[in-house]
Amino acid sequence: MTPQAKLIFTSSLALGTTITISSNHWITAWAGLEINTLAILPLIAKSHHPRAIEAATKYFLTQATASALLLFSAMMNAWYTGQWDITQLTHPTACLILTSALAMKLGLAPFHFWFPEVLQGSPLTTALLLSTLMKFPPMTLLFMTSPSLNPTLLTYMAILSTALGGWMGLNQTQIRKILAFSSISHLGWMAIIVSYHPKLTLLNFYLYSLITATVFLTLNTIKTSKLSTLMTTWTKTPALSTMLLLTLLSLAGLPPFTGFLPKWLIIQELTKQSMAPAATTISLLSLLSLFFYLRLAYCATITLPPHTTNHMKQWHISKPTPSAIAILTTTSTMLLPISPLILTTV
Image (cartoon, rainbow, N blue to C red; front, side, top):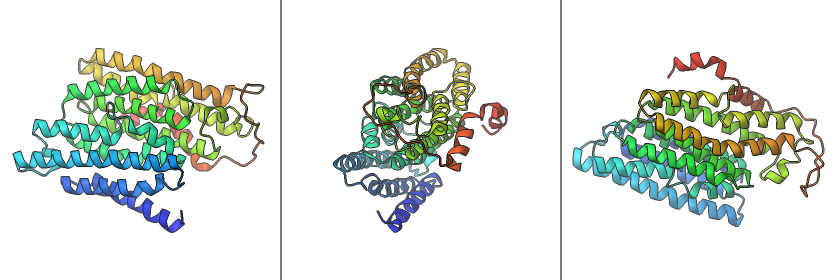
C-alpha cells in the first residue's frame, strides 16, 4: 500500500471517529460509523492473503448489519417520539435494537463471533486499530444512551462476555485471537457498569486501550504472532520481553499495576448498587482470562532454552527499545499510585 493511500485511509478513520463522537443527531453519528468502516477495510485486506480478504468481508457484513440496526432503531424512535437527538432515545423497542446494534459493533457477546476471526486475519497494527480506535465511536454512543438502556439486559450480556472471553481464549495458540478474546472479556466489565456509572466505563476503555496498544506495539516490534515464536523472543529482545510480561500482568488486572484500578472501582460501584452477586460472578469469571495472560507471560519470559519448540533461536538485537513503547509500558503499569488524582476526573 502506498503512503498516500495509507494517509487517506488513516485520516478518514480520524474523520469518521470525530464525526461520531461529536454528533448529537443520529444520522451524523451513523455517517461517521460508515466512514470508519469503509476506511478500515483496505487496511484489513492490504496483504491480499485469502485470510485477510475473508476477515475484511466478515467485518464489512457485520458492521453493515450493525449500522442498519442502529439506523432502524433511530428511525423507530423518531417515528414514535419525533426526536432525532441521541440522548432522547426513549422508546423501549428502539432501545433494545440499539443495544443489539452497539453490541455487534463492539463485539460484545452474544454478537462476538466475528471479532476473533477478523483480528486473526488482520496485520498487528490494523488489529490494534480494531481493538481500540474502532471501538471508541460505538462506546461513545453507548455512553450517551446509557440512561435509556436496560440495565438487566446489559448485566447479562456483560457476564456472558466475560465468561465466553475467558473460556474461549484458554485453548488458543494464536496471540491475536487471545487478545481478541481478552477484548471481549474487558467489554463485559465496561458493559456491566455503563448504566450505573458511565464515566467508569470510559475510564476502563481508556486504560484498556492504553495497555492493549502497548501489547500490540511490542508484539509488532518483535514480529511475533504465535505462542511458539514468542518462546524464542527472550534471547532476541530481553528488555521488550520484560516489558511485555509487566503489561500482560496489568492487562490481567493484577495489583499493583494500572489494570487493577478500573476493576477495583467497578466492583466497588457494583457493591454500592446492591449488585454484589454480579460483582462476585464477573470477578470469578475474569480468573479464566487470567490463565491465558499468565500463559502468554510465561511463554514470553520464563520459557528459556532448552525447550521443545521447533523454531530456530533468534539473534540478540542490540537496538534500543522504541521510546513510544517505553512510555506506554510505564503508563500501563504505574498509574495505580496516582489513582486519587484519576478519581477526581471520574
